[in-house]
Each structure stands twice: as structure tokens, then as C-alpha cells.
Image (spheres, rainbow, N blue to C red):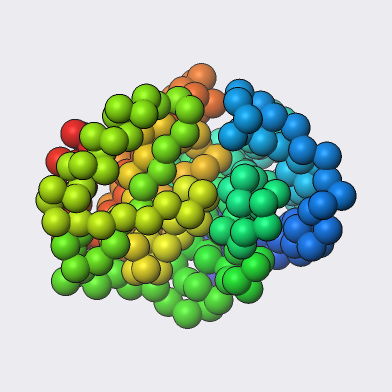
Length: 266
């Protein structure tokens, strides 16, 4: 920590970027030889995990434990390890495991830092695209070092919205969500990684993203990116055990907020 970085965020952001690059390289190596991976199912046949997910998360945890032993860590594969510093790293080693194991490039490494209930650092590495998204509270968002700033003229009617769905929500509710978006004049894409689609909102590629049920490790890094690029997000409940549970996730560019809140019924 230096006098130019009194909160320590710049230092933590730099570490998160370095760790995301390292973890992304390990994941990309596994991706290149994915036919050798043993794939396991979780809740249902669409919810999968591999040794790549576990090894990448262990790597990330080790790097943060070495640098900040008093920080907490919450990861998708190994759960919550409480800390004493007031900071908690929230990580998804490979968000988009289904695309990953099926040979599609729409996956990423997601790293967020939570403090006082707010995501204050967000880093997303998309190795197949050679892209690193990075943001910290009050310091803006960047893609491969280039500042990101959302275009206020983009709406659901002249841009594309990302949506997500999983086995936590009913098919009928997903159908209704799509119906309401299309009726409002919008259109949508789904690429299999909620974290990556949130990064795309920050980059202006998508005008918004909605998923009725996501976990903190899927969304907090993307939320930080969207906020720092000039967008808005629906706060995620992080108090106590709520941090490890799922909730609705919604993020949007300025001119899409009200329309997407109507679509989401929020």
C-alpha cells in the first residue's frame, strides 16, 4: 500500500489482473486438451464441472492467501472461507463450463473483491478472445487497458440484450422473460457464461443482461465492470448466508434500465 493507494484497491486490482491472466492461461491449456478431462455432473446433466475448474480455483485461492492471508475467499467449487480483513474475494474459476467442455470459446475466469457489501474490484479474463476486463471502484473500467464508457443512446430496441437461464428457474418463467423482451422491441443472445455477458454489457456489446437466478461468483466481477463503465446493476444480497445463495441479476446501460426492469418485473 502506498500514499497514492490509501485504500489498497490499486494493489489488489493489480494482483487480481495478474492472477486472472495466470489462471486464464492454465484454463486455456486445459481447454486445448479438453477431450482428456473427466467431466462430472452437479445438479443435473447440464450443470457440469471438471478438474480444470477445481485446479484453477485452487490456484487463485493460493495466490490470494499468499498475498492477503486475512482476506476471505468464496469460490464456486470450494465454498466460503471467511476472512478477518473485511475484504472477500469472490471467484468463478471457469464460468461457462458447459461451453468450455463442449469446445466453445464463451467461457471466462471471473474474480471480484467485495468490501462492505459492494464489489470494489472486478476482473474477467476471456482467454480464447485474449481479453482482460478490469475495474475498481472509482477508477473506471478497462478492456485490455482501453477505458470503457457506455453509450447513453443504446436501448433495448437498437441493441442486443443478454439473457441467462438455468435449472433454478422454470421453463415457463424463461419463456415469459423472452416474450416480454421481444414484445418490448428487443432481441437477445445467450452464450452460456453470465459473467462474460456482464463484461459485454460493460464493453457496450450488450445493452443489458438479465438472469432470474445467479450466484455471487457469477455476477459480482461483472457488476463492478458495468458500474465503472457508467451502467447500473441490481444490488446482490451479500449479508451473511445470502452471499452463498442465488438471486436475480440485472445490469444495464443507462437508457435500458427501465425497460429491462419491466422485463424482469423488478
